[in-house]
Length: 229
Ligand SMILES: Cc1cc2nc3c(=O)[nH]c(=O)nc-3n(C[C@H](O)[C@H](O)[C@H](O)COP(=O)(O)O)c2cc1C
Image (cartoon, rainbow, N blue to C red; front, side, top):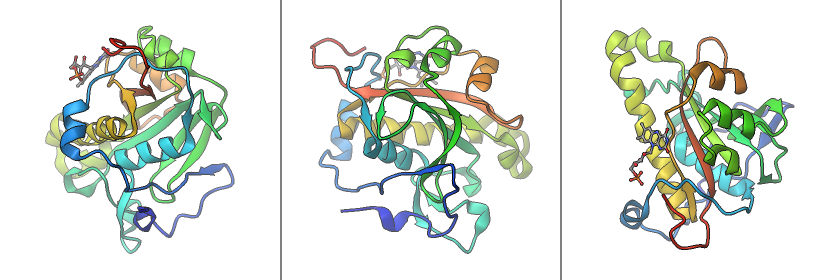
């Protein structure tokens, strides 16, 4: 089964965008199994990720599940993760090093057209690893998701309460989706919040109005026993 009916029909991809394969809704692991199996994984097999896996992870994180092209403020429609006031303050970047069918580089995810917009060419995993206080899983993983937030999208409506509470609540919902989607795909991830903000900002070329919040390296589970953790 495909979830492509959840993708917005508008927002045509730009010339510098990489179209992602449509996400699937055919996973065989139940939600309760995924919850039971989810763990933070810091070591990965050497294999690359596929573009289909990357597509699935980004869709689970923030993809469109109910297109609403008549309401442009929604950026395409309701998402896989809830958001206070449906304001969707988060942005997602992919720092790709070893993804089959994708040039190494940094990309910004666009939920509406479900594509990746080119930000910077080249394998930047080592830079991101330095920015993340040398946590080697960032360098070893084939790719990392990097979350940032445009706080003003939320604070314009909710003020300080939005800044102190809602944006990070949104992030938690989305990041847990990534954890569970990884469990379902036989992949591993680990949420990382310990990093130098300015360095992550620099590596991922974040615009002025975005603040980095979370890094989630993703890789295939290693074969060896005891490799988790
Ligand atoms: C907000 C947050 C920040 C975290 N930051 C880091 C981090 O910087 N480095 C790391 O190795 N793990 C990090 N973790 C992962 C936790 O260490 C992990 O969730 C915890 O040990 C429980 O293990 P489990 O996720 O396998 O249940 C973070 C988790 C959360 C929720």
